[in-house]
Image (cartoon, rainbow, N blue to C red; front, side, top):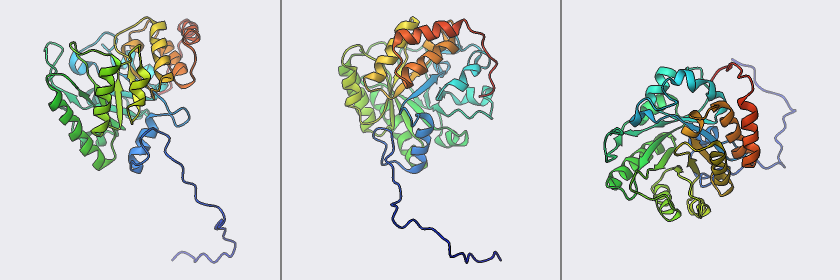
Length: 299
């Protein structure tokens, strides 16, 4: 038997109230500890923001330009990101199990780029996401599209499962080819996704009134990078999005299709986490793109 603790020098700090800090992320104060912990791995508690790298494009596009060999082009970037957004197939086959970088898994899929309609289904079991150590799952929601109700229900089923296990759901506002990307539509789509339970919303940036989109959404919004832009335009978009209320970015093609992906990622991080103005971020990009690239220490 262990010896009894008979010390008379115990200190209980009777006059010091136990600290109880509010959780730093918008709309997330009532979540269970596990869900808050997973979100805190993805969003930097110091800045309240995240730089996610989206490499899930292959789930409907196949070997997208820049993602032909994820092991060659993407793994060297992983140490710089706050989180990855990827598929379980790439995770299992390419990402080293020793990686410490948190990730969201793509949880919806079905039709390829060859199809006109995005008739997606849930394509991932939440238990498998937990088995892999995911910090969350992401699902496409086509508000206003032909498959609106079905994709909304895909998301709510994942939300229910995620709440059972403390696993956040990222609802993605999918616009397809037929839907506009103005503030009026994005306010509608983001609010619906948040109202129905998603803990994070991923949406596109719009040039006018984007701050009304973020203000009217009760949970964090991360900006989708969208199509490849010139570096300065992409940096301006990222900077403006966070200045107008976004809690970060989830960029893909504007990183991995850049002429210097590592330099671009570093510049985006400065713009998002530190508010570096776009032209200064571009100067950083130009400096880094010509610097020797060190071998990654690990992911």
